[in-house]
Image (cartoon, rainbow, N blue to C red):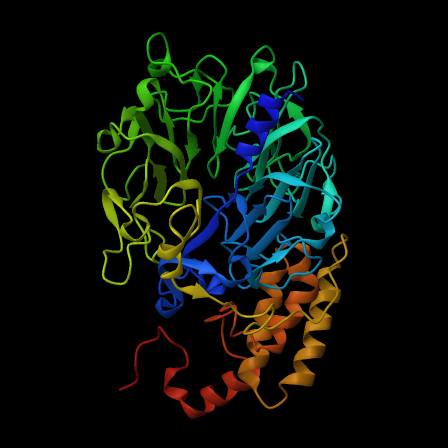
Length: 521
């Protein structure tokens, strides 16, 4: 390696201080009324990473967990790992071999023998890239999003090898993954859920299920497959939304924004980014839940898709005039909020409820237009990442040590503290029969709640609901809900009283029987 190349490589892995803003109540994400006292509304340092040189951060628009890499190649993960909500299920996406929520960044020990240089974060899965071009993944694999070539194991609690080689970068959507490689003729590969055409292979793999001619399903794609329509192209940038993919070619850009409101099953170039307004190789490309953004000629930022909760969608790329003239180095989008690092400022905007814009306790919650994060003014932002109700910012410590010392430090709770830890082993890949699952829960319910008939009914209701859930819910966590009396999940409410309670109510209020008949005089 030449001296110039070595210097360039050293410059690329420069690290800085990681700052976080947004929710810390991972188990309340997705609820209408979150725990506001658990929101970090100002950029905050995380105790385990204070002074650690972080060079890369990742979190997806559908992700309730975070990934950070330091300059030595160590991988840290933390965040949501609880199964009581359906927004982000407990799927082992933190890679620690368990299904316990973690508030503190924790090193993934199973990756200790690798130097991790890139990472992607999906709804309930994580994919990393090593210095040697290998890719490993962990978490949910129901749709084949881990790229192992099989969906036999629906959950992988430890990192497993992906069937790709010479990987340069990776990006994750909600339930799919995209790899960029240096393999000739296969520069971009995808795996996972193809429902909306996000894999780019010209089909959604839709088929009719066996039990009904009306009910549709989508065949999982567990083996990474090269996008044939891009076989002769070199993809230099890629970004994933929840159910869409955008990328930049070596010579010009591409990805949705085609003035049509329909799914695109194959990559198609954008008319805006042709001729004199091309997307350069060093362009900033990002994707939010339902929008895309990139920089084009002159560094102008363009956006398209659903930009705000209200108002019309932008059906094609439009210049974001509020950012004209800024030297934009990095950008990322969450569910409906955005972060940009430009010049010596950090800029954010969008719809927020958990302080993820970082405006501080006296600042506004949301902003319809780009606005500076005052507490980070004068700092050089190295990278940003946005997830579901949270944001990550890495800043250069040079000349701002005093400014960083004034920021709050969040300690977080030890792993498992404040949440009920699983008492069962990770569920087997094979799902038990409905009859055996119901019998196990009924037995546990009789032992735990003999005195409460209402709790018994809630447990029985959760059995019915859990029969259609994933393996770990049918095994270990159906029992956990049963021990709680069905209150934690909120399932089974309003499904009728138990037989004993119904008889008592009937005896106490006979006038209500035969509802719908004329009243007696």
